[in-house]
Length: 181
Length: 181
DNA sequence: TTTCTATGAATGAATG
DNA sequence: CATTCATTCATAGAAA
Image (cartoon, chains in turn red, green, blue, cyan):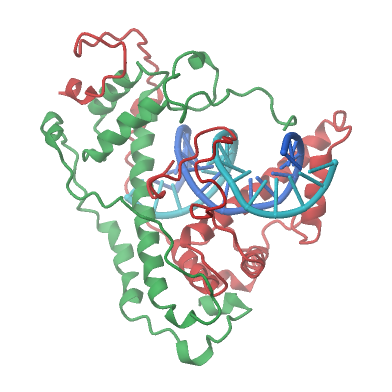
């Protein structure tokens, strides 16, 4: 539910068969990477790149646009997801080894393992090779506005907050703003 | 789907509308905003509020607690994230558009490299409506960020991006890493 | 068809 | 304010 969605490409909710997009239109579809794009991205990942900087993302996106439509955010999400899921899998495996009692027919793990076996990912921790120099981490020292501190301890949840805005809180008061004066 | 369903709260009312109530008592780990809450927050953001003060956060949180469980820190984080992602998105879109321009020579292979909708309606200028006066927006300074210069320096590429079009862009370099230097 | 899986996209919650 | 992690939603494509 983000802003840049095309006006009416709504996803109603849970597995909504009602389908806003219709599907056949393919207009609001999500990015469908080509095999070449995936190949390059995977290669970069395997080379050690995990979280490319904004600059890197832009360059990668530019390069990959040769193979088909792509946007920067796609690259961003791809790395984000890829890293997260690799870690997720690893963690699940660990847990699985911990409780080796309850995986009778673990089809999920099998298929996932099969898929990731060919790329040789699971057993490669932080393989930062010579391309490391290409990823300058931008260091910036900046403020420490720990304003959040005030809210972390804040646990006052006045469920019975009585605000007399219009004398009726029955339904959503769209004029909530008025009470902020 | 039965492996990690340890029993988390089920998404109740993100896009469903109404509903809101009911299972608000779930022991969800993280805040799951109601559609009404999101609506109000978005409206506030749209009205120009970007970095609410502590006081404003408290009030907003109190008001929104009517629609469901919420804490001050949720409001704080919401604005933080919304602003950050808005900016991040805008940056990406700008660059993508720039890339699109410099990929005109790709019209040979890339078949359907049309404009993606991506109708960023985010461009809501000074939409400070009448409700602005109702807000003591003491912290409305979008400027003064010297750190922001980090990206102005990046804009240099946009202007004089002399890509080696005629030379070696016939087919993408398979060893992409080297081209990112 | 329906079901399941892989994965793109989104966002709450941090951290620096 | 920028960046990152964790979790979840949503959906295209493969199985069944």
